[in-house]
Length: 274
Length: 193
Image (tube, rainbow over all chains, first blue to last red; front, side, top):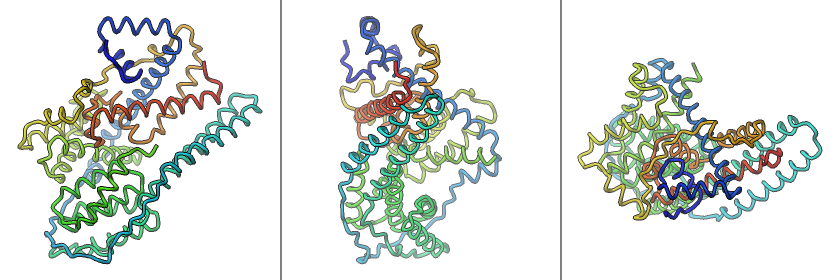
């Protein structure tokens, strides 16, 4: 009989018909004899069914959208114009020394999160006891759930902010030796950095991604370095890790101290925040 | 029309990083810019096939786009397919790393004789709402595993985790967390059994 790490692995195996006949019989006996086990399996099936339903809906919407979008608009979405940039030599920028300061907010965030949830749940519970109609209860719970989710989201953003605290961006990119849009890229870079300072993270990411794609060599690495921080600030750890990987394996020469910084950041964002 | 544009754009942007991670893991000899190009070509090819009716309409589009892209990457790569590498990345005793969840559940699978249908309906509404607010990486792990026809190994590659056991542990944590949130709300609404 296979040892399962947890009941969910067992449920997956049962539904996927991966159990031997003996295992299946034993599983079904447990369903008949253990009400808690049966309840857990029922709840699991409900979640899986709805995950599949929500994906199926999104899938259909996507197909409809792809079929109905105009060719020109589709081309705009997928366009990936690239220009060749010169390989540039690295200019050592002593002024751009990032100050390292780590604020261990993770535990504080977790306790704050639990405390906030308890306060909201306690408040909601007292309110509900005083209401008579189910529809009124539902409407109120919906609002408070939204607030709770917003609160959780705000705390996550605060944690992401803390991860980027003390980061000083490159003031100027390494000069390009050729390429007519070098000035435009520099301009866009400065605007993106200003947007980051003003917490307009999405705008900053959009601009940085655009010039990141158009650049090469050391400039690409420098822009990539800033892009990582922008993604972390926005809480998008998947893209942050992707860019870290690209910067480390690219043909630019980022100074070792910045590469070390990216390594440390990668370790932190590889752990889930909750 | 604007809505269609937004949907296509969201999918294009969202799948891109996962695709790049997965292909880069499988074919490290390919340059990132080449992988980006492959992604765009795969996306374009998928749309063309969709419009020409070459693919069944209940196809899982994310998996389809990824399959096209991976085939293109395999052709482009000078190295052999990274099945060996993928196996090395999984733990020796994780024999389920390449298994896929292939069962499609229906409403009938959820109903018992002793169930109160109205309570069940309301409970399902609660779960549906919670699924809408799943954070990452839970959304990707759960949707790709239970609907997307992705194995643990493939999910590990796309979200850039180190082992399939880590992905499984996260999947377990995500489902547990989802269940806790649902239970909390159902208790408040007196929907518990």
